[in-house]
Length: 136
Image 1: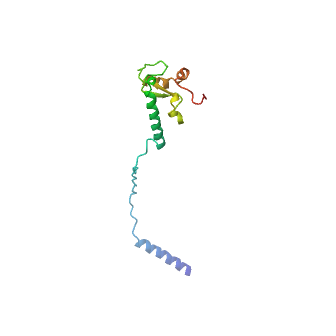
Image 2: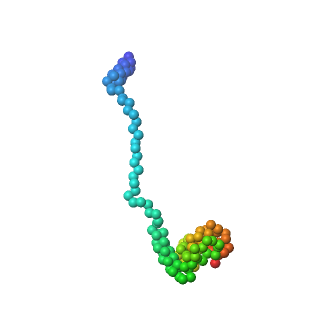
Image 3: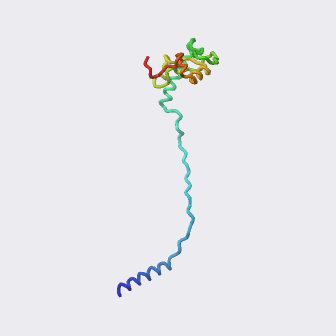
């Protein structure tokens, strides 16, 4: 009988506790709003290394275009030439030291430069472009 009394007392304790407790309020869930934080400094458009390379290239480009023979378009392909050179075409590309190597520069007008890039096979045939992987 002792066990039953204990069990009955336990049931009575929990029933009293349930009666005295306040019912839970049903509140709607709140959605947390996340705000994006702005970076304090914007991401650089160029790396510091590329900026240094560009300074070196602009100096080489300026020197190249100042030579009297380089002031006119040197592109051999057929195009609507404006005669005055405004661009420097990198015949072997811009990778590594080729970016400022005047040996592979070719002065070009804008139309000629576009023609070389639009028709690469013909540019290789005429010498306006050179394969980078091919050894000299």
